[in-house]
Image (cartoon, rainbow, N blue to C red; front, top):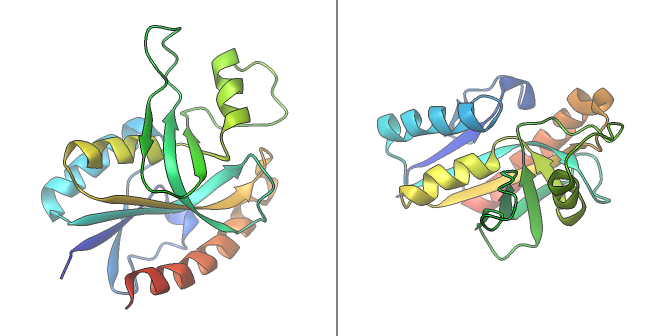
Length: 180
């Protein structure tokens, strides 16, 4: 039987639970540096066979609040000004493309770089951890899956309420995915 662990940025996304359907939940922190550093330590200590990330994301298309999406590819916000390709990691054949950035996306701001704006237009959702988590798992050859729920559209006013809806939807999806 595979050892599966769940990772989430913050307990606010899931009411502070320590496990879900018998699977342990680990908090990796907000942002790419926290995510990569904390997941590396968790992998060292737990030695899982599979990592499942879940949590909230900014909605860049027309997804419903709380709708759970399987991430198909993650795009890093590293802007190398033409020196290299935009870093992308494919996770699955699902079509949802997640832009991972250390900048909280706010649709009312107009001062983002042209590369940032390009990724906002080309991606479906935006988060702050998925690329870093996918990279760490890829380097260690550990299967990684990411499920995000639409929690806001660049306006964080309904974030907490939408997280509750999204987490309830994720709980049901996870039950079906892992066949508990």
